Image 1: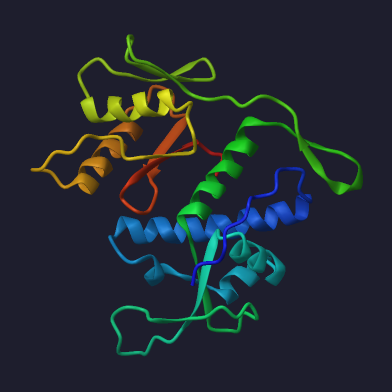
Image 2: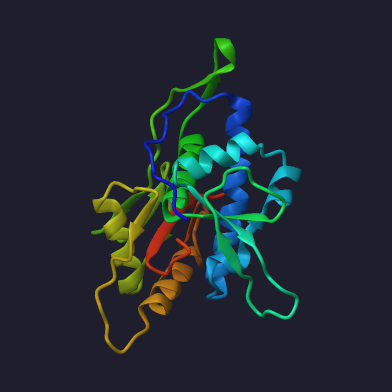
Amino acid sequence: MDAIARTAPAYPMNPARSARIHTALGMLRDALEGAGDLGRNAWDFAVNLRELRERGVTMTDLRWLVGMGYVRHALERTRANEICRSFRDTRNMAFGGRVCFVLTAQGMQFADELIHRDAAHDLLPTRNGRTYLSSPIIRPHWDTALRCLSYNGQIVKHFRLPAVNQETILTALEEESWPPRIDDPLPPAPALDPRMRLHDAIKGLNRKQTHPLLSFRGDGTGCGVVWTVMDRI
């Protein structure tokens, strides 16, 4: 069911096509996050072709996403009396009426890279209807000594009491120069469910921000952390 992943093209990208790709990735990411919130299989929240087409996503856009390995597709064969949705594997890219789509882990990372690219750069239109990136990336900063998280010169969160799990996540992000996603950096704790512990730490990062500029969430697998700039999704 998986497509062969290829290297994503860098910008410039046709603005209309870029907008459609953003739409598709946004819908599929919302679905994946919804499944993760409820602890359900990603396919229980698969998005069908009609929903995507109604939002302006073209068949070419979907074939590109599948071909790049960002999206998986399958034919739905769910019966009315079934509790969970069921699907049949297909490699056919004709995409009939019952085909549905889910975002892959690689697709989630690509979606976040696009969001960060748009949030951190000015998109300047040029000739031939193409866009180019101009300004440098703005990344958050975690000061371990001061225990202070900031973004673009503004304090996001200042820890006055110990919050070991939250601080461990921020330290890992800072050490890796704030990529869109990192693996769960919390050390093993046999008595605790690692997914629930990570979930609680992420919730803590989002609470009581001095300036609510950053949003943290799970990656839909329970094994990773994703961050975005607020109001840029």
